[in-house]
Length: 129
Image (tube, rainbow, N blue to C red):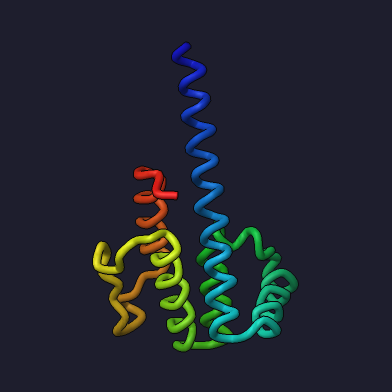
């Protein structure tokens, strides 16, 4: 009986992680579309796949590659996209930005991957979907 519960717990954790990844990807789509428009967003996804072998659906597991590409394309302007994605993600997950203060002043203070990692752990632990 304990083994069944362990398998169910693993499945549940995997399901929750898949939900988080789906939500993150949808939020990335929304953020890019909001700032750049649909055509530019599709162009970025095409570039990621052709030049970096990174498919759209694999972005949540490869955030560093995604961010590096955004930074190469937009320079410091990538920070605006990252902030928009984070704000949309917090909103979508019904979290208050005051729960975790997002520092926006410069690249050194804003750590997109760190925020996503912490948020993922927090959401999976609390199962807030």
